Amino acid sequence: MNNISILLRNLEFSDTGKYTCHVKNPKENYLQHQATIFLQVVDKLEEVDNTVTLIILAVVGGVIGVLVFILLVKKFIAFIIKKTQEKKKECLVSSSGNDNTENGLPGSKAEEKAPKKV
Image 1 (cartoon, rainbow, N blue to C red):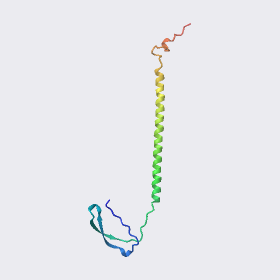
Image 2 (image 1 turned 90 degrees about the horizontal axis):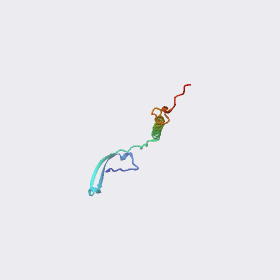
Image 3 (image 1 turned 180 degrees about the vertical axis):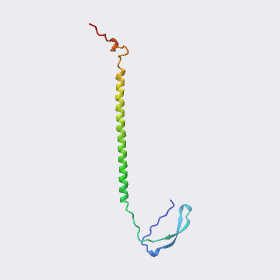
């Protein structure tokens, strides 16, 4: 916002120097502004090759993703094992709760006849 970029082509080293820009802003009823800039012409703009950086970031991101996945699988397996063990405990408790041997209910030891002495 409120930035202006100018691309200059076919510059010579002799074009280096101070320049004054005159700008009219339509939002301010075409009020004229001016600014002085210093232009420095350089030999060539070098573009930086980011391929290696992108490869490194991709590998690091992939490794982090694999670690997170492994930890999630581990948590899931631990959860399943815990639930399975809880089910087994519930089965043991419920089967011992149906044992009426001490309550004198049908099927209890109280109904068993004492062995006959001969």
